[in-house]
Length: 280
Image 1 (cartoon, helix red, strand yellow):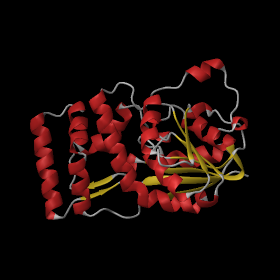
Image 2: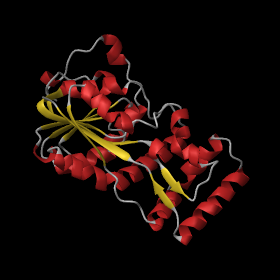
Image 3: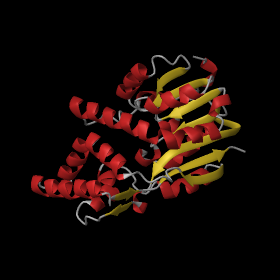
């Protein structure tokens, strides 16, 4: 690693990385979460990869992926560029998983670091990116400002995917279950379900020339929705149980939901925003 890239951090900050992904999860829950991340990375690739190409990842010399998690999204970035990719996450457990996921990519360096105080010098990276990070950040404005700080003048900051559950559409409606999946469950876990609508504000206040868009313009077919649900069923059932639904209520909801998919009338959509910020 090039020593000149890193800045000196106060000793308190050096010690203080939070295991925010794995904290409080059992080994079984952690493994289930990894499976969910893998499916999520696969399903969002069609939205993310055009954005990476648009912001110049292919020709970038230095790229930083903030909040890289398990490395499954970083793998897409690494495969698109001949440049050097630094992937950073606040969880040592996730970095250990990423080491396995990214072991064949020699152009990736992994580090543990807090997105609120990125341990790199200013004006270093051609592209600095994150994916589904700001929704879970305790201070997303500070994270975006840090991403802008470490990006070169003329470089790009990209938030490739941040959803907004306030815009979620679902039919046929279920007045008990829909609010849970339209933000209540995210809020209970400490996330911001309305982060998408705030991206423009975060990027503009970080001094970036900002472009906002919605990446997921295609609405999935009922067959795609069903395949995703069946793959992630344990997660959905767990969320509903945590929200206080009984086994009988969950069974009834699932019966109605699968019937509407089989009939071909189900529609699910919620906007997933991206933000591109160019540093003057």
